[in-house]
Length: 369
Image 1 (tube, one colour):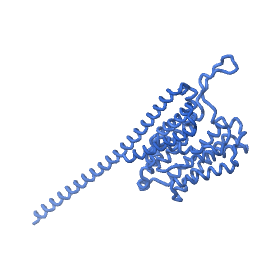
Image 2 (image 1 turned 90 degrees about the vertical axis):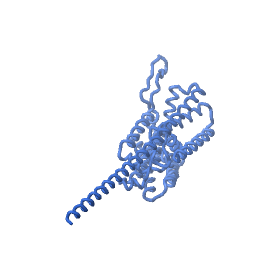
Image 3 (image 1 turned 120 degrees about the vertical axis):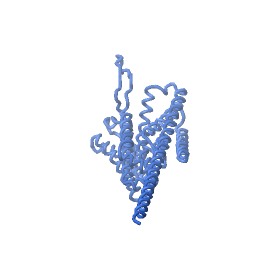
Image 4 (image 1 turned 30 degrees about the vertical axis):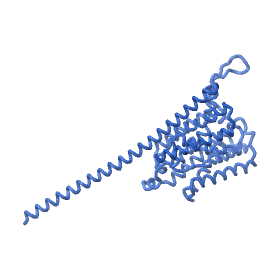
């Protein structure tokens, strides 16, 4: 009896070991399958981003080719710097829009916020505040508007479209109210330094009244664009906060269950968007050396278009700063080339509108693929 009992115990022990082994094997296979599925999703996402980025580069190359054939002055150094300067405003707002779009949101208030921020900076200068402090004040005003957007979305649970649409009207109304719908002028030469200054301008003395300009220099706004693009790109790709931004856009609920503070990330992203809009307003008003309360109308659409052309997806979770900068140049070169070929501003609006519709349609098709 004892021998039979021992044999039975041995057989039962062997069955338990085999069962445990099978369970471990099944668990390992499930874990491997999950890892492979995650890897496949990441590869698919990277492929989409690369395809869209190369498509944007192709569009940019095509525009350069077409406009170089239709205008002899298109590839001149002075026109190149002019295009780069025009692109900066689109790029600043496009970078802000990209961060918001990656979270799955949208910001329609950036054009109005830039006007309010520029007006605020001008009013501070008129009241005797030094120009650098006044510019910083304008950026803070923009950040505050962005924070209000974030609060309405995260705490009041308003859809981003509605929250930012409301801010678009509020900010524009405030800019018009405090200025009486009139431009603020007489801001002094120092106010125009940020928007009109250049680095590495090269001149040659020819003995005449004016020196010959060998190289017009790189405008400060272009240098600032490069710095901001690099900084935000590093933030998105190399920091925990950047990874959280992508996580929120990919799946907010999964991100929350993983420990990501979704509300905090969303609030900070909209605050960043407002700050960049405020900076854009300060740079634009500095270029004009005048604060215009009507400045920036419809700029938010150019910003969104530049982000989508560069590969950002309106459903969230996908987007790069390098792609957005390319998209900004696509829009800027399109406008510049049309201007050089004598196309009226009304026709330009129609063309840009068609480009926006086309890019959103392509984005929808890409997401269904």
